[in-house]
Length: 73
Image: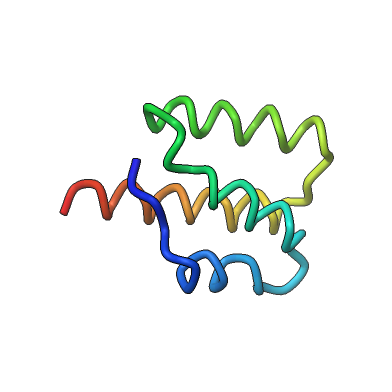
């Protein structure tokens, strides 16, 4: 997976009602996931463990989607 830029991550982390640090930390390490499936599995595991709200989960999902899109280019 492609690494997102700090500016791209900031756009997700500064959304209303998201846990900023959770979004930043997850998306900063996103490129360490070998597959999209692994990234989504890690997201679901972390979301459950840390009780992230739906806004935080959605921001991270959209960050994963952007990384996928960048990988295809």
